[in-house]
Every structure is written in structure tokens, then in C-alpha cells.
Image 1 (cartoon, rainbow, N blue to C red):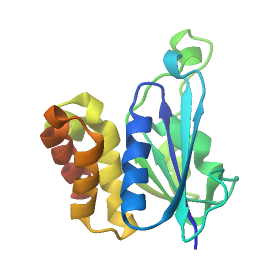
Image 2 (cartoon, helix red, strand yellow):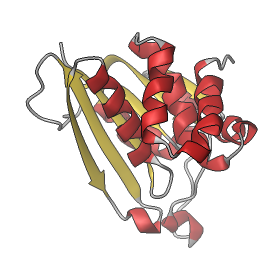
Image 3 (cartoon, helix red, strand yellow):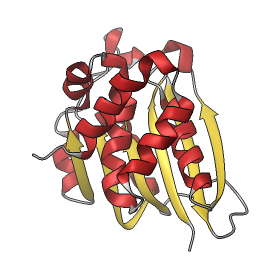
Image 4 (cartoon, one colour):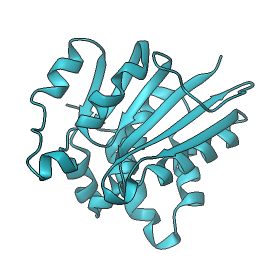
Length: 190
């Protein structure tokens, strides 16, 4: 059985590190893994999407609309944008942070109200203030690892394995801070 995870956010939020961590972890667990990165205007705060698919045998990294088991979103508008890709019974794990896209910054559009409330009426939403947790871990840049810690609650792979994979993909001087971020996401409760 193949599982599909979309990691979505805006440029500069660390989605590539998150997908690298997830890919290394899944490979170490013996899964066939396919990862595909789709960059929007990532340098200008545009949407960035990474597809991660894993199972016994995976033929394509592409995730079709209505087929993702998880959408992990680094920002709540991105959760709304990519929600149609979630399959029935799937889960959105999202940061509650708001990052205004360029049309909102320039005044050409307004940031949609009540995104998470609308989503909760349609799909399972696990929302957390990953930015505050990342800052508690030592860096606002660790939002990605906080969200990976949250995802770890759902995948059934022992937590220690996540820490091992993190030690492989993160530079030594950032390991302790990232392990704290992973733990905060994993142990978060509303």
C-alpha cells in the first residue's frame, strides 16, 4: 500500500530539508520512496510543494488531486490551497502562522478569513502554532522540523528513528535545536 504526503509552504520555509528528512527516514525503514519537488516563485515567497510517496513499490512521485494521505502545511493559506489533494479520511497538519502572499502585501487582495474553520468542516485538521514551538526550540527557522515531529505521530515509525534521520540530514551544530523542535511537535497537545 503506497502512502502519499504533500509538504507545502512558501519559499524559504525549509520544505526541502523536511522532505530530505522524511525521505532518509523512509528509506532507512526499507520503503521504496519517490520524492518530487515543485518550486513556484520560491525566492519571492511563492508556493513550494514537495511530493513524498512511499510503499513496497512506488512508480511515480506525483500525487493526484484527492489522493494524498497527508498534507503538511507550513502556513494556513497553503493548507487551504492544497486541501483538494487530500483523500477522504486524510489529514492536514498545519502551522497556524499567516504569511501574506504578494497580492495581499500589495493590497490587491485580502487574506482569507477563517481558513482553518472552513477546512475543519470538510477534513481532519491538526493545527498547531509551529512558529512559537520552533522559537521555543531555539530558532524560528525550525517550523519545518516541528511539523515533521507532528507528522511522526501519524506514521507509526518509532520516534527514535526520526531522531536518527535528523542527525544524518542536519549540520552538527544545529542537531540539538532540531531534536528539541522535533520533540515539541511530536509531544504537542492542544
